[in-house]
Image (cartoon, rainbow, N blue to C red; front, top):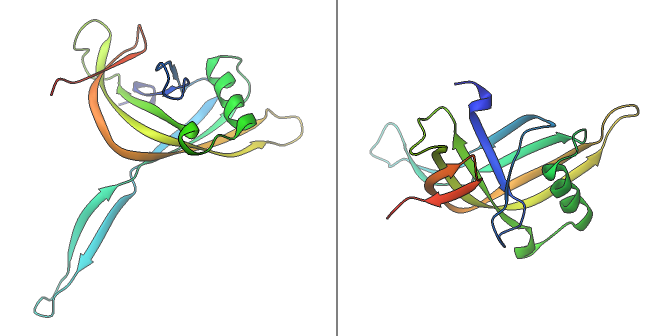
Length: 159
């Protein structure tokens, strides 16, 4: 699968009305680390230990060149200027697999998770674009559903 087929959309309303924008233009790299938490045990009667997977706490690291004037840039600037904390720093990100067959029209399989926005830095070298760095820290579990790329709306799967 090509990288452009794994899309990430951030809720720029910060949970108020779910207004999703694509994390795309200006971003050369976006990595979602799953950060598994494990526990290992070895009993005295065993020659090898056992690993237990307890949980995941995903993080997403984004470096964005401030070179494209769009809704994503406006949101990045707001986060950098306001430095939100607590609940004001919480939002949703939807990961969309564009290589999957749409369930209906332009609605693709997707997963939504709450994240905390952690502003890292802004700036850069002389003569270049400003580079903004933001890390998203996962909060709780993900919800499976579909994301309609025509309307930028997430719909949770039926229970």
